[in-house]
Image 1 (cartoon, helix red, strand yellow):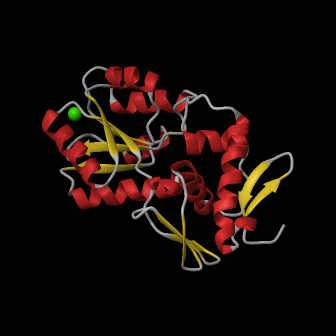
Image 2 (cartoon, rainbow, N blue to C red):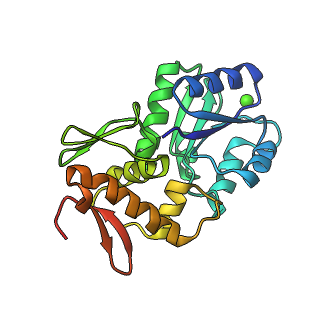
Length: 230
Ligand code: CA
């Protein structure tokens, strides 16, 4: 599943390069030239990751990181700080305000992508494109293929995202509202029972290869994917 990545960088050439990199890595860039500009964008969309320049005109990167981490609607978003060699960057301070990682400019595209991937994997495993296999059920995020014991399973886009999310964090119970947040996205108005409808479709599809029991209902709590029989 592609991630939306907000780039906050005031130097146009570097911003261009970052956006290009993100696109080539299969993700979707959003761009802002200042913290103030980013705040406007954040009113309409919550990205999966923020690349935040340390030295910005107006509000500095560190101030903005602190602000994002203090706000309940943005505090979950992982942040990678961008610093220039020679900036008086203090790694400890950066990590103290809640940044997840930092990259020093000039960076190589390869290094940047590796950092992005590592942070996404840690924070939102379903955003990475690593194939996953659980008990003969195989999901490949790059080809969007799902196979159960080598039988191709046809899934709609929502069921695919749902399964990808479950397979990325097996054994964990997710409430309906957590699933709405993670699978449908923030700030989308969908009723809780929509989740039940898609769970039912997902189980139906998985029944072709006998994998429907992997998706378990946990009474009063939500759903989980578990390889352990209920
Ligand atoms: Ca700058």
